[in-house]
Picture (cartoon, rainbow, N blue to C red):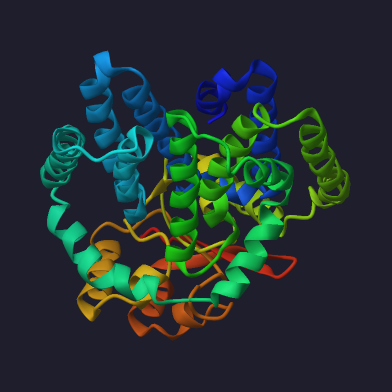
Amino acid sequence: MSGLILMVVWPAGRALAIHAVLIALIVHLLLGPYSAGQRDYLMSIVALGAALASIRAAENSRHCRVNLLLTGAIAAIAASIKPTGVLLLALPAIGMARLRWHDAIWTMIGAATTGLLMIGLLAALGAFWDFIEMLRRLMPLYASLGSRPVYDLVQDAAVWLAPTGGLALAAMLNISAPKPARMRVMIGLTLFGVIHLLAQRKGWFYHVYPLGIGLTCWGAYSLASLSMRRSVLCVIVTAAILIWLVPRALTQARSYPALHAASAMQLALESALPHGARVQALDSDNGAFLAMARAGMRQATPHIQWFSLILAANSVREEFIAALEADPPAGVLLTNSQWPETSGFDIADHWPEFAALLVSRYDLVQSGDENGIAWRLYMYRRRT
């Protein structure tokens, strides 16, 4: 991410490019450790790649077609991470300030080629129709959960992106200035971030990543065109926000309960199972995935969160139980994070087939409660 930001902003000056990188890193650190593995963060890196390719397509006519192909391919990758990534296909047209059919065709060829490769990979793995079924049934249900009013989304996003406040001010102060292709792409990247945030409807903190990246690049590039007085004002605003935010964040750095719970679960897994053992983990936000990765465990089935079982048809739950019965994992790790349901173990305890499987084949060997994050580790009972 840092390297791509440097490449995008570098023509404005080395100092401003480094300034943009530092602000992006501060936002990343303040959002907390849970955000680093989110798809929104990964898509932000891909979006920066699409922006850079779009800039080169607009600025270098000699290699325009290659960069358009690359932009389309990168946009397809972003769309495979989250569907809103398809909007990145518009960046070349924004950068060139025109829409020509042959430019659009080259971009679509890049996207289609990458899309066909992904479809072929899914088909080779036998997962294509499962993917279609997920898109058709599960994703609309998932998207409908936890929707929040737009006012709440905007209010929370302003807090999470506060470190970019000075750069956002720089972008607004420079809004009437002539805009070269590079800046137009940055504005397009920011608009993509706005649409992405609103399209999620849930307003979770890591949804602001694309918007934060776009604002950071646009604002840093705009600083180069401002008068000294306005530039100093923007830097003062940035410094004041950081003085307000950073000390408080440093005092809270050790207060993430999910990290403490993950450490406890990791220790339990390592003490009970060998490295590489198959474990069925079911969690949402309480650190089980981190514990599994750190302990070197392998996930037993594709289901890692409760919502894919809660919202699915009965046949999916039956297949899940059948898979566990046919090839029992060495352990089962559960937490009390069962989103979209309230916190607890009610789903596991009140699902007759799953509860019967645990009782008949597994022993509860360890449990814990770290500041409200409860977990249970079951070990497979060897038959004698």
